[in-house]
Image (cartoon, rainbow, N blue to C red; front, side, top):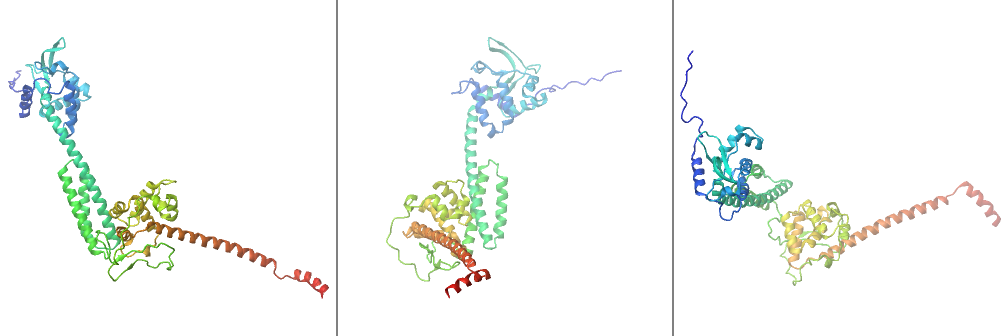
Length: 449
C-alpha cells in the first residue's frame, strides 16, 4: 500500500508578518540603551502601566510584567539586546492560563509595538548568559519599550487631562439635571403644560445615563450644552407663564413683603403681603447691610430652633451650632419651595447665618401669608429690602419671641383657669343642699329664734 506524501509549504509554521511587526522591529533598531532620565528598565514598565488604560493595553500588562522578570539591567546597555526566552509553557504557568492564550497575548503585544521577535532557524526560544551578560539568544526582544517611553508619558498625561475634563463635565451635567428636575417639578405643581419639555428632558436624561461611564470629553460637552439650553428654555417658559413668579432675578418693584416686628392683630389666615398700586416709595437713607455675625442678631441656635420649630426636623445634632443651623436651613429652604439659586443669592447677600435665620423666619409663616410667588418671592422681597437697608431680622426675631411668649401665657392662663374652675365646682358640690344638712341646721336656728 502506497502512502501519498504531500510536499510541505515553505511558509508552514512561520509567523505571519504585518506592518506592525515591521514597525516594532524598526523601533528596536532605533533604540539603543535606556532613554534619557531612565535609570532602570522597571521605569519603562511603570510608564507603560500608567498609559495602558488610555492606549487599550491593560490586558497586556500581566504578560509584559512577566517578561520583565526575565530581563536584567545590563541587558539594556547600548551594545546589548534585552531578549528573554521563556517558553510558552513557562509563561502559561506564570500567567495561569493556557499556552494557546499565551500565543494570542504575544501576537497582540507585537501588534501593539511593545515587543519584537528574533526567531531562530528552529523557531524555538533559547539563550546563553555568561557572567550575567547575554552571549546569544533567540526569543522576545523588549527594546521597543525603550523607544516608546516618550509615547507612554504623553499618552498618560493627555489621558489624565481628558479624564479630569470628563469629571468636570459630569459635575456640570449633574448640576443642570438637578436644576431641570426642580423646574419641571415646579411647573407640575403649578399645573402648567410642559409635555414637550418633559419629553426632551427624558431624552437628554437617557443620554446622560448612557454617558455615565464614558471617557469622551466632546460627547459630554455636547450633553452639558444641551442640558443647559433645556434648562434655560424651561426657566424662560416658567417665568413667562407663572404670573407674579419672581424666578429670573428681575425685581418685582410693585410687591413689598411686610415683615411683622410684633404680634400680629390680624385674624388667622389673613394676607399680610399686599400689592401697591402706586410707585414704590423713595428709598430711605442708606444704612449698613444686615449684620453677618450671629452675635449682632442676639439669638442663639437653641433659641432659633425654639422660635422656628420646623427647623428642628432637619437638624442632625442634639446641640446644634450655627453651621448645623445653616445646613438645616438649606434643606428646609428646598422643602419650602425656595430654589437653590435664590437661597445661594441670599447667602451671598446677607451671609450664611443671617440667610439661615431668614429662612427660619419664613418657615413660621402660614401658607396664606404669601402671594403667588410663595416663600421664594418672600425671600426675594427680603433681599430687596436688605439692599435698601430696610431689612431688620432682629425685629422679626423679637416679634417671634413676643408671639411665642403670648402663646405660652395663653396656655398657662387656660391651664390655671381650668384648675380654679375645678376647685370652685368642687367647693360648690360640698355646699349643696341636702336633707341631712337641713335637719342639722334646723335645731340651731330654733335655739336662736
